[in-house]
Length: 88
Image 1 (cartoon, rainbow, N blue to C red):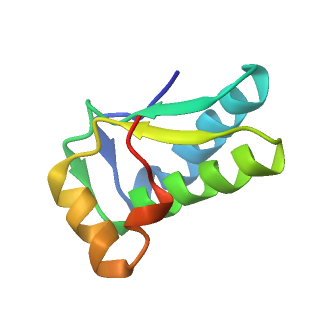
Image 2 (cartoon, rainbow, N blue to C red):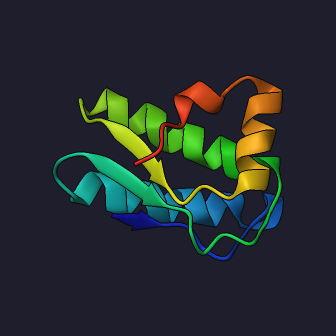
């Protein structure tokens, strides 16, 4: 399982994405991202999750998110991408 940090804004997005993709590539099987620790975020968090999803699918793996904060789920709905981030 991949774990998001407590803070994921534009300032942390590149480093967080790099870390997540490295973990994703080194783990076999389905990809689950744990977002339960996420407390401070902006739309960059969605971009990071969507890139993880894209990479998961390019490797032939399923993708899901565990513990997506309600505010981030609402933001995903506003942007029309909520269906791309299924709950684990």
